[in-house]
Length: 262
Ligand SMILES: [Zn+2]
Image 1 (cartoon, helix red, strand yellow):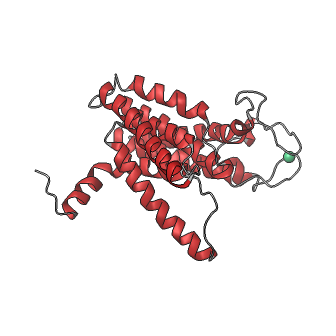
Image 2 (cartoon, helix red, strand yellow):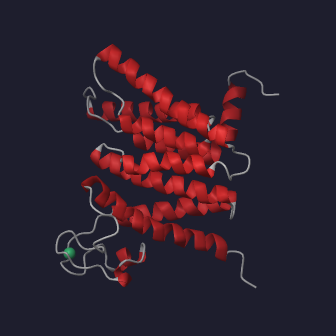
C-alpha cells in the first residue's frame, strides 16, 4: 500500500524537474537558441553541467549558488523557477487531481512561468509559445469535461479581439503603441485553455493589479512613469487567479456590487 502523500509529493517533484527545463527555455528562447542542444553548460566557463549538479533546488543549495567549474555566481532565477513551478504543479494537482484538466492547466501554467520571466527581462512574449499554445488549448478543449470547443474558440476570439481593439484605440488616441502584439496572442492562448468567461476576468484583474503596482512604482520613484512595464506578467497573474479563485471571486464581486446571482 502506497501512502497517499506520495501523489502530491510526486507532482511537486515533477513540477520542479519541468521547472529545470523551463529555465533552459527562459535563457535560450530570447536568443533564438535551440532548447534541446547543446546540453546545459555554465554560460561563463562552458563547464558541462552534470546530472548531479542539475537536481532542482538541491543542487543549487549544495553548490551554494556557485558554478562547480569556475565558481561564478548562479542566478537565483534557477531555483526560483524550479520552486515556483513545483508549487504551482502541486496546487493544481491538489485542486484537480489526476485528470486531463490538470494536465492542460499544467501545460498552461508552465508556459506562463516561461513567458513571465522572459517578458520581465526582455519585454517580449515569444510567439513560439503563444501560437502553439492557442492550438494546443483549442485541441484539448475537445476532450476536457465541462469545457467545450466552442467555449475555447470564443475564448480565443474574445481574448485576441478585445486586446486588439484596446491596442487599436490606444494607437488612434495617442499615436503610440501601448499594448504589444505579444500580449494579444497571450490572452488568446489563455482564452483557448480557460474559455471565454476567463477573458474579462483576466483583463479586469490584471489591469487592477497592474495599476496598483504601476502607481506604487511611480510614487516610489517620484517621477512620471514612462518606463515600459511589461503587461504579460500581470496577465499571467490574472490567469492564475482565475484558475484557483475565479468562480468565488466573480460571485463575491457580483454580490458586492448589489447584483444578485439566482
Ligand atoms: Zn562556470
